[in-house]
Image: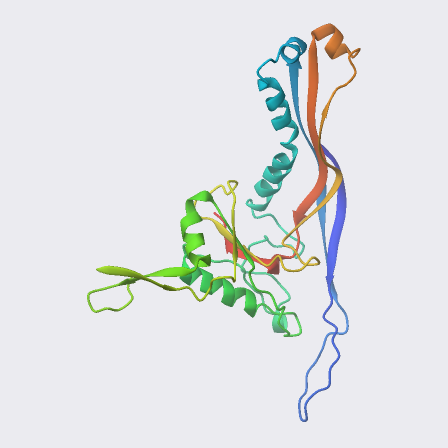
Length: 274
């Protein structure tokens, strides 16, 4: 259940000092802008009771393997919880959704977008690179952001690996021109994008056409934040005199975690959800 709330935030420090060129004028912010959001601290748990006799007479090791699998599931339990929150596109620190076309306080007071609408492919990859590299601070300076990772569902694995691969397919029409319709032949050419992006396959996307580009190159800027009160852990009771063991002849197993988590730096992610 929900335990308590935690205030988290960050300050976008836009203060800069440099020598202006002759005849150049420019205004630099002297104060940063603070953003804060309230995260709910959530307790997660899974409980299983295994009969004592099943454990005692587990000659094949089946029960022991199931125990180990359960105790290792804490990480997956937390991962699933975070992905469920992320793919719901929640409201972030700037009071709009994590993916939005109206992120405030861009250059000269403009709004900025981190939404992509095209199906995943080489054009969408180009669009992600252009979008993230174009994002700027309130004073007009670039944020110097570029995608380093591409997260996709299993259904987009082949397309994602083509984007990151050594070669890329080219489809041509009967005139020998690159085409998407009227294709009569195909070939492969060296992929100039190789090495730019790391592909991560996630089974937790709710829609098979969703995808997210992220810049995970900086420890201080991430699209998602998490603080653990209890890190994922698994426990098996060792008290053979407990009520569960003595009266019900079962051994309790529990996997638990407690964390506060939510959207953080929107400008480090772009893509399509829903």
